[in-house]
Image (cartoon, rainbow, N blue to C red):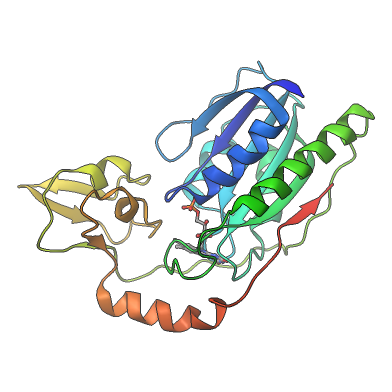
Length: 252
Ligand SMILES: Cc1cc2nc3c(=O)[nH]c(=O)nc-3n(C[C@H](O)[C@H](O)[C@H](O)COP(=O)(O)O)c2cc1C
C-alpha cells in the first residue's frame, strides 16, 4: 500500500467521489483530496500517486474541471485516471482526461471507466456504485499496485476519439419550486458560479450553468429541480437504460 495519494475529483452529486474514494482508500493509507467543484487545483509533489476522477457529461469531462487541472505541473508523478458515467456511454471522456493529465506532466499508469447512478435520471444505474462495484474497484487498486511494484510504468491505451465530441448548450437550468426556503445551499455549491441570490430570489445564468445537478443535490428541501417537462423528457429518453447493467472497465 502507498503512504499518500493526492486525489482530485469533480463530483456534483457524489457518484464520482464515491468511486474515486473506493480506489484511493484501497491504494493508500492517507488520501489528500481536492474538490475541483469548489477549490482550485494545486500540486506540491508530496504524494506517491495522483488520482484524477471526473464525471462524464455528454461524452466529455466538464470543461471547468479540465481547466483547473491544466494549471498543474505533475513533474512526471505517476497517476491513475477514472471517469464515472451513468450507464449510457463515456465516449471521449477517458481519452480527454488522460490527455489533460499528461499535458499537466503526470505519467498515467492506469485508467478506468466506472459506472454510477445517473445524476439526471437516477433510475438509470440506481444505487451504483454498489458494494460489488466498490470491491471491484479495490481489486483494480491491487492490480495497479502490482504493476507499479514490478517497475512497469508503461502508458495505457483507452477508447475515445480526437477531435472530441462537440458539447452543445442547453436552453434551460434547474429551477426552484415555490416551497424554496432561500437558504442559499444551492448557490454555495455551484461550480461555475452560475447562481446568485438576488433579493432573496435564486437567479441562474443559463449560459454559465452546466446542468451538473450540484444545486439539486444540495437542496435540503429537494425543491431545486429540473423544469418538470425537461425531467419527463429525460426520463423518457433514458427509459431503455433503466434495465441495462454495465460493468466497470479497467485499463492497465
Ligand atoms: C449534464 C450531464 C451530462 C451527462 N452525460 C452523460 C453521458 O454522456 N453518458 C453517461 O453515461 N452519463 C452521463 N451523465 C451521468 C453522469 O455521468 C453520472 O451520473 C455521474 O455519476 C455524475 O457524477 P457525480 O455523481 O459525481 O455528479 C450525465 C450527467 C449530467 C448531469
